[in-house]
Image 1: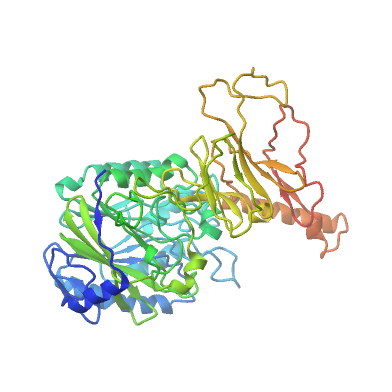
Image 2 (image 1 turned 90 degrees about the vertical axis):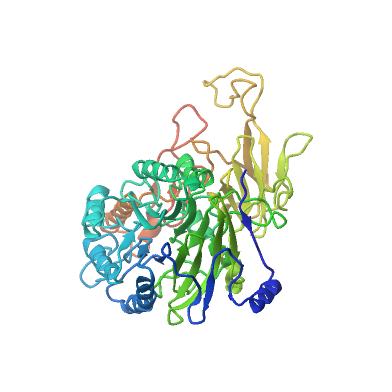
Length: 588
């Protein structure tokens, strides 16, 4: 493996270095830098210099334009200065352009996001920065479900309004430096949650062709922009939202396609940076930027090629999950680039966050310019991720091993919200316990994939992993209680079970594709239809059955297929434990 190098300073050494350096930056790169007191450090001007403004989720609301106008006015001096200096300037929007609710509630219930009016407002705003803008679509940008019957119709309007020839884009911002973007093109046709950011096969092939045809060995540098980050980025995520709902990573619900992006990053060192939004988290966390590697003395090699991954915040107040209102600024040239924050709550002040210096086409030095400035929020937002270790470092303390006597793994204490543990199954899948939940992790990157068992069901119980394959038996599908591995050469078969002190045992069966995380949240169109059916059922119960209005919600329930069972005969649609219900209960 070719490792890139990183320099990391302790707070004290960083302070000493800055105090002694006339450059007032966090490292000494092989390029001329000069201090700009009012706007952070600044790369020296050269013909190959470029500047890119990166805007996170806008979620524009025509009733609340003040923050957008203020943010644009803060950007204009930055952009105008770059235009005067070198002219290689662009603005990139990371999508989710409109508010996902009615912005005219007295007139209509229609969601604003994804409508023609939404995109026309966004196009007018993005065009007002005075430089060309590029755009990638997010999970809300095809949400014009009342105006358009199909994703294609919605996408065609999106492309027309923003004058885009295709969902993807490529722009050569400076010599042998490309800006590349990919758009989510699925909403109504989503197999699971409509808020998964889905890059279609055509764009994925185009992206692979683009990065492989612009190799680092020829001096190419590629900056990628997508609404959500790829699996393996190492960025801070929201477990209580994007992880459990299966919409955290690009193409989250498809194992192979989800992992494809980080594989391309590892294989193509021309990919130097990847910017994303989606999480509505600020830029004060140090892990809102992740480097390709770390000092080998500090931890295992993260295997992220030559790519720096960067989280981007939001511009408007009320759309942020942590109160921040920030954008990203990229300033670069042939020798490297800086990642900065434009703070919209502080008169557009520019703060240097990280500096990356190229030492050759496959190596770079990356340095954080400051410590984590959001420490008070760290525990709330930070999601634990397992660490497998390497030849120099053992796995983290949460790693659990199987018994050498009977190949059984026991979490032999009652699970609570403080329990942290993870393990690998024989099939290669990775499961773990966090915040009282059973979570599945990606076997390659150990990024969280989704919820297997919720805390409401798991807390107070115990977990065990036991062998379930019998080496010698005959397959007999006529009997309900007998099955076995078809040959001893097959991978060891296991059962994951949950049990309590009363002897009640639940087998946690994998999905048909072998994964364990539950694709619970489904397509928004399907959910809206189901809600309408429930509303009609409640009206029926009131009008025809005489049920009181304050009681009707407790008397209406829904059920879903497919019903699953170990039985080979369809005998019942009742799920154990669901015979009695309170409120609207969903069973399958």
